[in-house]
Image (cartoon, rainbow, N blue to C red; front, side, top):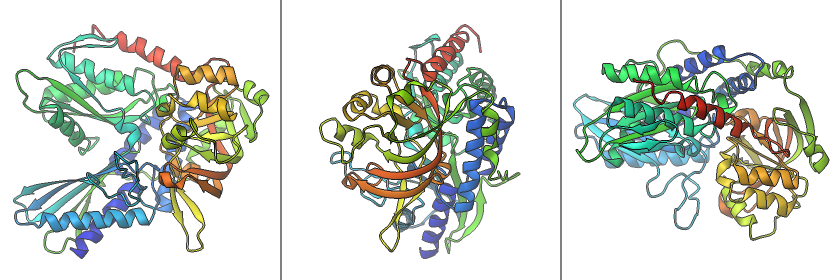
Length: 511
């Protein structure tokens, strides 16, 4: 079991820090299709640089290391009790070493276990087979993309597409709508797994199972293979693009599976996964638990270079670059427009769900007037001297803070908010009234942004757990794009409207 535990630890670290070859190739193809000098091209440049930095640093690609989900096939007679124990020990060790963020939270108390262990965490599924070897696969699926999963019960009325019946055309409408509703909040361009049939639980399970397929395989069922190709073509014509900024790459992969169902039920479930598609596997010897072979590492390995964000120089031809340092004035904010690239230096403070909820009824632990709040739950490690260091620090999905954000900004005088995926009408109205701005960072680019953080000044409210605490940071060259300004403009609303119009054009198309 000691060798098996060691192998599981290697699988966890490699999955968190090193994207599989099929995913790298899909991202390269998207990058090559994108129009140079656009915000989408800048985003893809940042993404590929981040992939390279994670390789070099052996650090998490994205700070949200997600829900670890293991799928294991084991020989008859394998001791699954001991194997599960070894996996949990490997998870705790990887968390301690900063390869995973502590993500296991008690649903009733809100307490973070600190080691990614708890009821239901991690997810481990076993299946027996007659081979004399172990097949172990792991997917780390973050909360941002997990929140964009969706399930349909047919027949149904689908927004923009009309009636979806219990047939391939109805399934087509469900899948296209699932891509539209994700917008940039799931860190597009993304991958989807689709499960057709079953009950509500097995339909979702089947959808997630599709994410374990290679992005480049061919569906053995001809009807489903044609549907996968159709979805890839038309989803990428919606114009949602990378991070929801608009552009050519909205979907990087689509895999569909089907199982039998009850006569009264017809479920179509979609599991959405971000571009940071962390999924790897290994085969192990059954007697020692040592790694025999790595899975998903066949074919050409794309090695992105550290200068992959060179597109930032090209985007300057169409976007204005503004350097800001807190405290920021209202006049500086009113001068910003959607499309501007903001470079932040100086103070930056993290705050996500627990912090925003707390600030509604409590004073802030520091003076936030003129300051910048970053929707981020970083991966942090403390050294032997007791100093905190940032290991990964990309943005989290901002829309969760929509009930609080405008009120918190006005109450404390916050001038800028950084996150991903945009926010809604309540926040947009508050930005107009108060003089605030929303800055969209590149989702998943946890190494790229961690490199911009030069010092951890301190932390407050650590009792909420490392991801939910308020970290006080010093940054240099922290780049983000204005997507909601103080004049009532929202790139997210514009892309949503234009992509909905393109979606509606597909309503009467017969598959």
